[in-house]
Length: 477
Image (tube, rainbow, N blue to C red; front, top):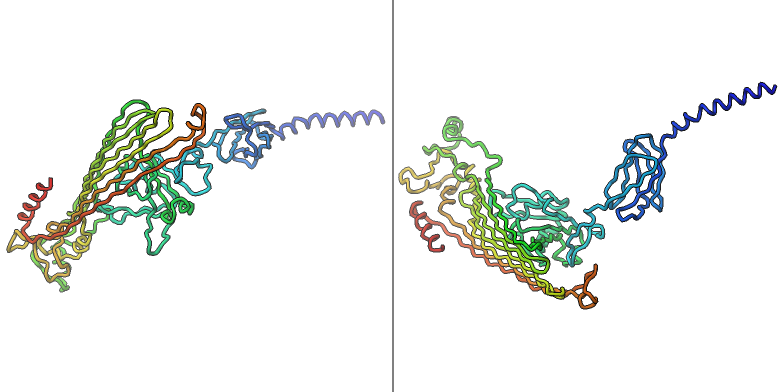
């Protein structure tokens, strides 16, 4: 009896001993870890997961965790405000999370600047690296397609004088203006026309209703805060040049009947029409390949106490129609000086611009499509004059209108502002130094806008008209 009991106990011990490796293999690897930030502070309640599985846990209030994983597994640690960290599973691991730099990014919100992680409103910041790297002929091109909820449309991109419209959060009014408030270097009421894309350092777009609390009803359609580039602070002078050339063509040009097709298809079958003996492609006659050039030259320098930046730019653009043209001469200068001891900071900005523009006549494209292709361009009886369209569906010669009609405008813009800032800490602190900022400032600013337009039509022959036009231009120069 005792022998049977001894054999039974030995068998039980053998089975228990055999089961130990199987149990250890089933449990896998137990990882003990600690999660901290770059300063050594524990990160509580961070999420620890194993990619590709449902295994996960949270760190405790002291940043510690334990997790059973398979040997060779990978741990992923995530927490709001920090970059995701990935490490190989080991018996004991210490994981350091890095701050998310985007949340520490400073954005302009109206009264000053703040970090993104301190904001509760909807603010989008666009820095130079985030802008479109393609063709940029205007400030609107730099943010187009980059910000959710901001719609930028241009119904006449082939016309250099047609400006894009900007809407934030959709249509907000039936009769009032839909465009956002433009703030340039802290001055509300700015105009994106009077700013060269190469002078822009950043955009901050305020999209929620909180913008009205800062700027009043003017900010009800959103606010676009533009910060321009300032002088360098390394003690050296820097110069740069930027040049651009672009071409504009019709995206979907309609295939029109030529005179022979018109005679063969329409007149041959007795349809209403008349053969005027000519052969002219009117859509091709009223259009051309648009061409634009833009040049910017800038110079900056200074140090942390005093710095400056000056830029000049020139733009010459021709539209896809025969008449539209835009020529711009612009400049922008900024200066900053801090007095010795840091008590006062003086800043000044000035931006003049002159724009010469010839307006397009968009109706010529409709008239070119409707024109009879057998209509000659010039009058066969008097080749110095354009053919008279009297009696046709198209009331006048569309090429003649573009050649002999002039719709011209001159625009002069001048934006300037000056700020005197009193830094109070040098008065309140013994050494005037510290990590805090306390200041008050007074700003003076003005927007000046002058626009002159004139329109005339000449009935003279093209050669005579061009002669007098050249004389007029020479006198203006």
